[in-house]
Each structure stands twice: as structure tokens, then as C-alpha cells.
Image (cartoon, rainbow, N blue to C red; front, side, top):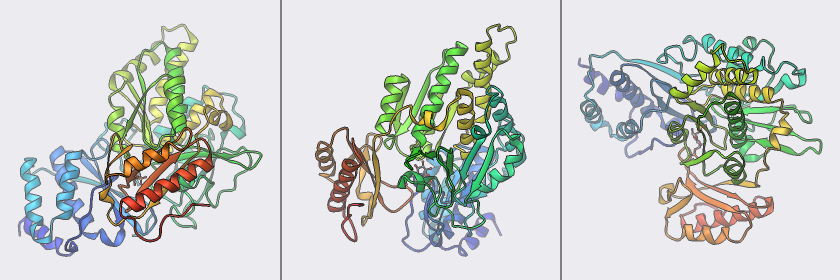
Amino acid sequence: MTQFEKVFRNSALHPKPVGLVLQYGTAGFRTNAKELDHIMFRMGLLAVLRSKKTKATIGVMVTASHNPEEDNGVKLVDPMGEMVTPSWEEYSMQLANAEQDVLLTALKDVIEKEAISMDQDANIFIGKDTRYRAYFHYFNTQGCYGSPTMEGYYRKLSQAFVQLTKHAPNRTDDQKHLLVDGANGVGALRLRDMERFLQNQLQISLFNDCREGKLNFQCGADYVKVQQKPPQGVEMSVGERCCSFDGDADRIVYYYKDSDGCFHLQDGDKIATLIGTFLKDMLTQAGLDLQVAVVQTAYANGSSTRYLEDVLKVTVCCTKTGVKHLHHAAQEFDIGVYFEANGHGTVLFSNAAVHKIEKLAQDSSIKNEKKRTAAQLLHSTINVINQAVGDAISDMLLVEGVLAVQGLSVQQWDAIYSDLPNRQRKIKVADRRVITTTDAERRVVTPPGLQEAVDMLVKKYPQSRAFVRPSGTEDIIRVYAEADTQENTDALAQEVCLAVYRLAGGVGEEPKPLH
Ligand code: G16
């Protein structure tokens, strides 16, 4: 039996429902797990081809990340840990949506277009989260994330973190203590394993750690960010620093409760600002002329963008939602800090920047103590960061390291700028593809009249902004609004929801005000 005959026979065991069409969205295929059997089979085939083509290990990540437990998803991961290249997203849709009888033709088409040698070996690594029905490892990265095992990765990040905190010698136990909400996901399990490598420089109280409770249910980074309240299951005292991961631990948000019981959120925008400020300070002290840029999406709070541009004076770019877009934009700079407001992100250093920093950090002839320390801190910062992909644990260590070195409390960090009140809503429509957008998803192109309606509504409220876009991970339309007060923000969000409902084919009951 030939390879193709085997594929054909096995594909019949994972049949595609006739007529079902799925998109490779913001982060791969995502839908109810019941609809994904044929997708998993076909993505396995495509991963093999990608591995043969690149002659390297390819990752298959099975997760629906922040989405509910009954959903699942799959995305392909390229050799250096980055999202699969866009032309292969196209192939994945051709394969995923090919009816049973033309699957082999679709497969052969990819082989031909990419001139793939079928004699080449393939190597695939599969990761999954804690859904009932991990991590991609760094087997192609020549040791730049430590030895390619879990333990190697823990050691590498922990050592860099301990190095960073050496420059903050007088931390109290309170400053070393952090509450972590693991979202009952894979990050909780990994953090538990990693703790022993941190040499007590970080003392973690872990909640929602998979012992009981459902993945992402009333906990996790998405819940905290969207609901703007603490997760269930975390016992937080006044002023204590807390953070939440999402289900597959690639997002992180921080928060605390003040003495009036008010909840304060430090989301991806605040994390980017903290890191951007630190890097600029260190580069100045080290006397290094490297350009720092911050990459955001339309969800970035207007106050953060203003602070970054006007006070910190760094270049700010806006891309479409999806880390794959931010990552790409960040690669254009010496140092590109990218974070989505939802807490998904990392920092990229160009090879030239890494080289300059390493050279300076190792230069024993530098007499100026401040300059030498700054160079060493930058060097440890590079080592604590996972540049392949946003990793909540690595981001957590980075934030903790920066707070320690800068001697900042969570309240002082929060006070760098004040967020404009904001609201995110979801609307169900018959077909979310009727809404198309432009300008990094900040303006609607179709259906006609919707952008004009949004523009009119925005004019009614001071300091306001709103946009509408189809989600790439859920079958819904997302609405974002911000304005001078929470009341005005909620009123604006409600009116924009109604405009979407009326002009873009809303289904079910009309959206109602939240309160
Ligand atoms: C994924 C992407 C993120 C994106 C989020 C929401 O997150 O990796 O970049 O912000 O989906 O996307 P959308 O608004 O298109 O549904 P995760 O954490 O689910 O992988």
C-alpha cells in the first residue's frame, strides 16, 4: 500500500462532515471539540509536510486556550517556536475544508507547490493543555532556551531571574510573594514543577491549580481582564500582588485590591509600559543607542498609547489582533516590546542588539559601575524572556524581575498612568463574515452604514473610541468601547452593540445594557 493509499484509508476514520467549512483564525482552528476530529487528522498530515519542507521539528499545539473547556483547537508551530508562516495557513484551510473525495488531490497540491521530498524524515512534537479530550519544546533552537527538556527550560529561566534579582538585594518577604491563578490549566502544573529552581527569590501561592475547578471557568486571564474583577478561588489581601494565566499559559495579567476594596488591573498594556520604561532606562544607563518600539492592537487602552508616545517617547505601532501580527511588526526594531491588552506578548531583540548587549555585559574594562550593571541587567533580561512566543511564566518572571530591580510596588507600577474606563462586549450574528475591517481592525468596511453609525455614537462622549471586529477564535462579533467615565463607556458600548445587531444581522434577543 502506498503512503497516499494509507492516508486515504485512515482519513475515512476521521470523516469531514459534508459542507462544513472552518477557518484558520486568530490562533488556528477553534470550535466545539466535537467538530474537530477531521481537522486534527488533517493538521497532522500538514505538520508532516511542513517538517519535511523545513527539515526541522514542527509543533502541533492542541488547545482552545482561553475558550471554554468544551471547545478545542489546533495550531501549527514553526521551527523556532513561532506561529506557522501565513502561506501555510492557506494550505491548512485547503486541507481542512477539502471534501473527503478530493483530500488526496489537496495534499498532493501542497507537495507539488512546495516541492517537498517525501523521502525526507519528519519530526513532530505535540503539545496539549489540560482539556480532557504543554508546551512546544525548543528542539530547533540550538540551546538558546536551555537544554531541550522541561527541566532545561526551567533552569534557564530561573537562573536568569535569580541573576536579575541579585541587583535588588534588599527585597522583603512581602516583595517576594506572589499569588498566581493558574486557571486550572497547564501553566499551574508547570509552575509547580518550576518553583524549586527559583531559589526562594519568588514565593508563589498557587490557586486554581487543577486540583478542583474547571479550566478557565470564573478564573484565568481572560475572565479577569474582560470581567474586570478577581478570579474565583483566590484569597487576596489588600495590596497583595496577584496574577492570572490563561488555560494554555500564554497570557498573563496582574491585579491587586486597594484598602477601599477596589480592584486594580494591570493588563498587557501596563506590562508593556513597565518593560518599555525599564528597557529605556537601562539602555540610557548603559549608553547603548538601540531603538525600542511597542506594538499594540486596537484594544490597547488610549491612555497607554498616549503615555508611550508622549511621555516615554517610544515608537508605537498598531496591528491586527493576533500575536502572529504583533510578532511580525516587533521584528522590525532593535527591541520590539509587543503585548495585546489581554496579556499575550513578549519582547524581541534583534541579533545585532543581542550582540551589542552581550559584548558590553562582558567588557571587564568598563569602570563605570552604573553602566556595567545596566549592561548586565539587560543581558539577564534577554535570558529571562522567551522570544519565540509569549509564555506567561517567562513574562511573570520578567515583570517580577523588573519590579524588584526598579524597587516598584504593584501600586507604584499601577500609578504610571490611569486607564480610561473600557468595556468589551460580544454579539451573536448570523454570519460574522459580513463584518470586514481595515486600519488594523479599527474601522469597519462592511456592512454599509455600520462605521458611520459608530462614528456618530463616538462623537457623543468625551475621550471616547469604539470599534467592532469579528472574532477569529469564537463565532461572535467583538465590540470595544472606552470613554471618560465607566457610565459613558457602558452607554457607548451598548449603543454600538445595538448598531451591530441591527446592521450586521444580529440573532436572538437585542443586546441589553449590562446593568
Ligand atoms: C488568541 C490569540 C490572541 C488573540 C485572542 C483573541 O488568544 O492568540 O492573539 O488576542 O485569541 O482573538 P479573537 O478576538 O480573534 O477571538 P488565545 O489565548 O485564545 O490563544
